[in-house]
Length: 496
Image (tube, rainbow, N blue to C red; front, side, top):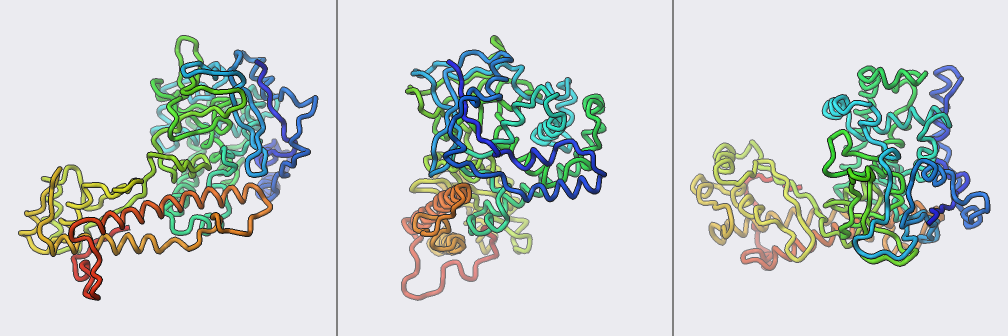
């Protein structure tokens, strides 16, 4: 079947203008690069989204077909999501479980070994100071500057058009305005994760010139300056986020082929936490393939598994939140501070009997009726032990019970207090939630608010379930007589 796509005129990311070869002096180029990012791409309207006789099939799909794309069981279709057009890979014909619906020859797939023409060099770079994503981003940035002379030009233009937009209409918070991150995600640990990811991207930007010099044979073909002279940090961040949203992690392949950019893959392909279909490399046909994990009717979006990732990572990487995600987690860090008089004894006890626990331990709260992980309880008993005898009395492993009612009440009271404080960080009502009566006229802003509301709502559910779990435990009930909090006066313990 012929794969068809609707072209959206004027929807190119600012990166298209920013990376175009420039004949101006370097300082003027920098000013232009910085100011170009301020111009928003024109939003698509229903009229602009309508297919014209000259736009189907698109140049992108024509390029794929001209370069060996076989007949597919999918097509690209523009669907309306919350009033905004969104290009999605859908079934082009009926499919049954096991049918191969997507096939992309490896010559149309971008991997590190293709970029550097050497698997050993690719592995050297990605085990040093630069990640696979940064290498892919740098390569496509220079290929983009070649314009139509680049083999990848149609693919790069498609990536520009998509700009990393996920199948829920939002992009990674890396591309949000800072105030949107702080406001929409208020109370969520994701705010700190976004800031840390931004710092990591900036660190990689500072190392770009290293790749330039290490892979001189590759970059000799580009008559341009070194990366940090060509691309501003903001340009690199935008390009990095776009690559991050569409990279596929292939299994059973060499390290240099593990991270791949697959045409017709994400973000056009819908990621799901509950799907079992995966993009896989078939060495016999030398194709990246997707076999259906369910029956499809023509026009239904095709799903692929996104891996065991919590929603915070799905939003950070792909701009999506899956409310049916069974892998959702909320981190809880517990630290026995070095100022604890029994710190050395407790550290030794953890080393001997703790089963891998450390004095600074990250626990993961899961969704469900019992979100608190079992190892957290003996850790708390040990952390709040007041005497050497209590330290040695703490048991680890299955069936480990409390020392006594008083110490267990202190441990659970401390945990309850910290979790209640975590829950109180979230503003009420959640900005962008169902009760928000002031939607923005910009569909993407609404999509960001909705994605953030789903995420923080799930996080609040986890915390409330954890508090309910504590209340249901022996010695876990809150003191309703106005007495001292069971956690008061306990040794220092950091929970966050």
